Image 1: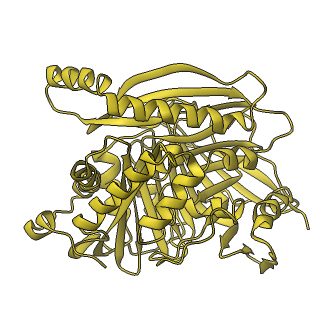
Image 2: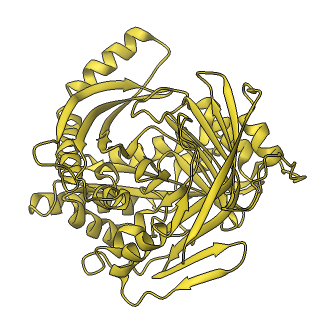
Length: 474
């Protein structure tokens, strides 16, 4: 089966600070997205480009060893007898799509957008990483991709905006914007914050992971916990608050599968463009203050913290190993090592790993080589993930995976962190802490709370005094 699509392009008057309004006015509320990024392998904040996927021609969903392609004509189920066949089947399916994209636009203007969840790794390591027998609270797809029908693209640097529309070859693409008439309900909380872990169990898990480190099984593992808050609304108001309060190199809001996912991610999972691969390991954190002198002191303290630096060096090595799987011999380099980057609320130690991509490898090969990021799993990666399955109490779902664009063998994915998912009236947030040999359990517990609370504050969600003093398990 072959699918061929052509495009029509129209430039529109640029509308400053109207990304949210444009989405709410014109996007289909069931399958649509906002993706904001730089398309340049840098950390400019806020991002240069806003890509608004207003509607879709097709979508792909992978879940529980099943792959489904949905088009306007039909749903096609692809039989998968062995978990290891999921990725090859997906690659074969993507190769059946011939998408004629605009040649001159400066960012993603057609192709696939979507998520590669943390759980998607299990399809190419099913023996070592079987699906855990744990609650799947969000029932989110392991892989979920959308092929946009209409895209609004805003270049905030050049103050330009385009509408790109796609249709099957031989048909005329629609270059008119049609209001959706959808009534967006205001977002608000309807209950208190609930925690997946209680403090004592989390601290015991940290100590057990430290024993695994002492025994030589791993060098580091990232232990995370889930928080849940009952909410109403579609999450678009929460996203608007988040992107304003926490400018990041990536921002995204996605509606699919009767849910919405949104976030403001500071970290690239992987970017591959014209054969050049780049990854940005990020680990080591201090909070920023309003005082520049204090920030300089905290930056120096961060770079002299042996635990933070040791953890970061491990993750540089892991990133080099990951990209090395799809890189030309001797092409992997670290042009920037352990510099401190400042974000809206925090500062992080960041490095840059680059490589030249092997000619015979595909975009999916690059994703497979790097997913999930070492900063969300640990080192060595497989054993760390096995222990995560052992000690975390629910499936991670999308958390720790990648979100972004795939077009003509180029890929740009952010790590799914600083994000939230709303489904069935529950908003889910997840945050982790890197456990190493000299970790202090109570400090790692506090780190997950600090990261989660920073997200809650950005969304304008206040915890009760009880929430702050104790945790309530599911």
